Image (cartoon, rainbow, N blue to C red; front, side, top):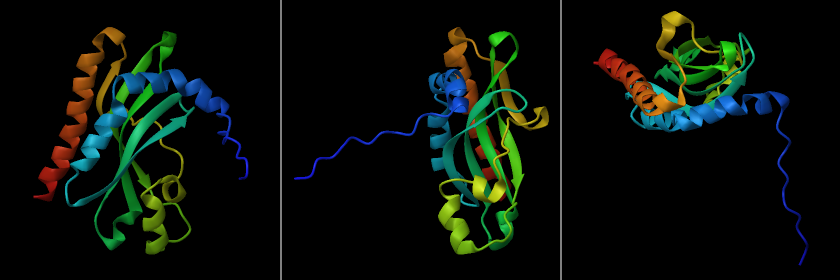
Length: 174
């Protein structure tokens, strides 16, 4: 019988290591769990994929969990909406939690439906780029500085903001 060696995971990137404290905050707030729940209740008029964890450095170090949605229909691939929860390294070693949306435009050289639907289920970056920082203030549904003592209240606010957005989408389809 051949001997097998245990698989070793690739070492984490420096950016991933820097973002670990922010990812821990999102874990404490159950951000990906809420996104997963909301994805399961998406309106029938929307295609909804994810959640997925993303990381970036601009305008400050941030990490987030996002869903990506778009209306159903052949020509509706041109723009997707990210719905997510971002943890942003704020001033004086505080973490800001932002719930909101960000629109991304299709940026691939061509659109082939078979390939698109194969890859879009797993990730959006191939077709819409990797630029997905936290949303601008006008697109924020909730924003607050993270305080561990307020964790349960923040969890409720995050869940309400995400469900409220999906309810708006459901209302728009009627």
